[in-house]
Length: 422
Image (cartoon, rainbow, N blue to C red):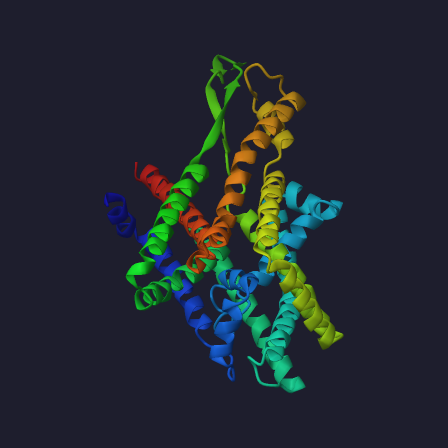
């Protein structure tokens, strides 16, 4: 409570928080403005019968279920980022930009990702609108009307990306994650209202199961997110003139879940990719698009197959994203340059190999945890038939992880200002 009071007493932090809240409010307002001429009942039925698009609705900030002018949300940008990070593995010039050019290179990499987002957003908008036309959710559109809706959806997606980057600049959390976070929370009042309206005493075990799973997921996410392996690091003494430098001991923290919620986002984006291909094929053959869409739905309607693929993708992407963001050899080189070493391990390449072995071991626990949490609602649905928990695990995982990240960034800024006060 004291920290909260201090937070709002600090003018600069208060201004940043109010700015972030204001920008998130703008995204929620835009998500509530629908495209004209939709059949709301058929749209709701379509989303309730399609689990993949229900997931995509999470990452659109809730705008997709309303078919709003920002219906795609930050989804195309996330897809573009995944494509760009995969390309760093095979294109040396992109790898150099991302890893070796520092902050300037990261800024250039993000700019290229935004350029890639534009055509991806246009293709996704056209494919999705064509799919809704085939389901009679939208009326038949002229060529001009279709182009107009595609342009509006593309512009809305880029607007959401712009808002996300403005939020990130405030250093109160990642803007893209916060937009998704706000979209999930915006659905909470409606879910609670629906539960109250449809409540009957016979469903009490269902609500208790939801509550227990929610508490377990929150506690597990906090435990895994905060868990870390501390690698001891010693610094050799150096004599310069009459002064002695170094000789201190510290540690290198390696997080159990180095990747955060990104593996979940990557896995869902990849699961949506066949749907995306089916939508894009509408540019060449609407009938082929419908056939591909039906094939994908039949393949993924099997809960066992769907959850198995989902679990495997989450585990693989956890290792992939950890490998992208954590380079053991580079860290060992930095330690060697600063005169640091791991006790009992030779500096240089042996230290890098040791760090790689440790991070692979602890990442296994983080990957398995993320995979289990991701498919836990699906497993519950398979064994109990409870529809209420269809996306609870993923949503709770994202909400808790983003909340922890925001709290850590705010706390670090408060500590910085306390030092400035001294």
